[in-house]
Length: 369
Image 1 (cartoon, rainbow, N blue to C red):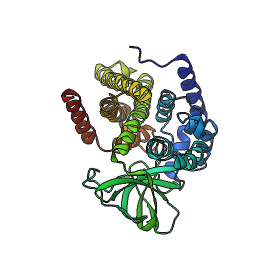
Image 2: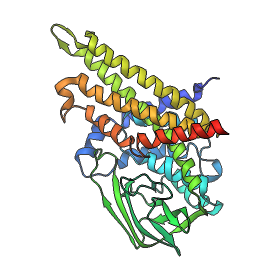
Image 3: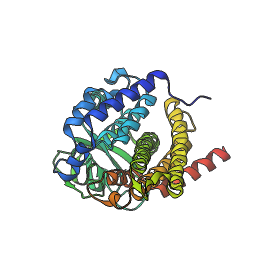
Image 4: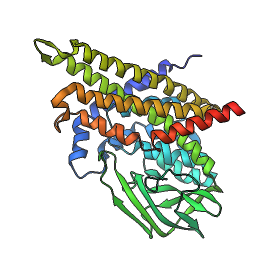
């Protein structure tokens, strides 16, 4: 079985990489980190003009109709430059939630606007450090009103609307809420990675509409599996950049009359980075295949991709700093942008422990089937 991308998909990857190299230099990321902007609005407009939010959407909803493999290669390029845009929140989470769980009227209303960049969406799931599941969700939805607090919500300070997981009756429903409506308050949060904004979003009798038919925790599980694969590609992109940065620095930096990359200890570190990155890539390719074919193996493939990519990115970003030595720890160096993003992405869909448990649970379910 060939899990590689086609020539057309590789060409799309090359064009995406070229665009981001020109439009998202590390100076753009530093501008967001050190300034007051929540995201790079100019870059986001360019991303929308390139049609990336519409890549995997069906044409009937304003999409280009390519598929998830094309979205995967774009995600990897976004990860390489730690792009400060709300792409994952709006495309991997909000768009997929509506596509999977919405009725036709909701799809017709929201998806074309998401595809064209008129709306930015997000998914509000987390309610603090506890694991989100049907027993721990405390936000309530009753009589068309939403009450409670979600924290942190990715891009919650800039999104136009959110898909919110809320307790409804004996189950959990996904509901749509306009974040500018009465009864909604938003407070930006200080996080380790300010280049991807987060917010505390509180609801007090906020008007909301149920997504689809109501009790849809299973829809949320499917959204998380899809997002896990796509974010794994972002993590791989970032991990590969860390490895390249470490290699280039080790070739150009001299100590004791020779490049530091010639010392065996650093060779071992970079070899370990390479092994972890390639393992993560293999799992992500398997996840991309399962995602693009809607295969029953997707839950296992998504969890495998999530766990291995999280491990690879964390290791590569940490070792990149170490190989840069004292320079790597400074604000002026670029290493910390990738360490920040690695830590952020490791928690954005739930911690590695959560996904390891999901992997074990899904493997056991497969075995007993």
